[in-house]
Length: 447
Image (cartoon, rainbow, N blue to C red; front, side, top):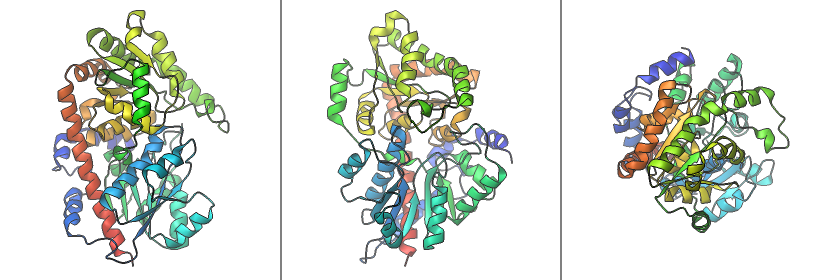
């Protein structure tokens, strides 16, 4: 089955039935019922003995608040549902103040950085490796290393499984995909953050014992920085519940503008230049209409370090003069705690990114997602959690034409929008509970 055929198949899924837990298309048959039934009957993972130890492979980079959010999100889920388990984080990167944030929020957390003595000890002491949420099997080679060196089990939590990664301009070859499928097959469980990834993996022969839809860990990110958020709102005259957030994004993140070790990519740059007006015109018009027709302001803010400049060029600098007084541009990057605190004080969010909407829905804040082909299938998780009419494909003229009226509807009927966001949040939390039941069972089986 080709990827396009898979996408066609999934467009017909009854997402309303999925939200209620009755649909089975796109999930392993009976997956929700099976996971749910595990929870009440499982004994404590440690049974009064030495606590079970989990090595969490996560924290991919710190230039994007979404990549930061994966880790505290999964840690929060573990803390809530498996409080007796000891967790060690194996990060790729926790610089720019992220390590301090994690240690403050999770004081019992151990951190084993690459090539450290702590990591060697974690390989010896930990019972299970959990690969955190990401755009793919981000640490594929590390899972292979864990299996080869320890023989201990691992699981994969909340990933997209794409033919073409979001950072690539070409699809992966058959050999690379077959290697990834082999890694999936050796996992005790794999939770995919969108159903299209699940179906693609199954079509390629993936057959882990448990393969289900499992929400991105960032839904549970609860980092806060209320003082910073309050200062920012006061300085910019933004009143709680009286502003919407808007996030710009280019087709490919121009990492060469912020990372000295990343070379300029002419192919990605050309694609960005060709599509940037197309991808931001509807966001700009939504800002204009919100400013003119409602009593809300709009905050143009970033999810990664490249997006302040994109927001200035593609949104702020091209707005009519009469609306500028009702629009705020954030010129500097922020960390996840401040961003979450601001989002929670907003009336909602719209834009071309994924993880800020995820963090909003995780707190019951309405969020509209605009996606495009280069973002892989991750955006379709909005259909999986019952928010399909808040998902727009910028490569579809029909979808693009619905963006502005949907943003206005969200702004004008906030109570209804919040009710829908809260329903999605409850579904996500149900799945989090069920996925942790699966992990609890695996830990209980480790001798």
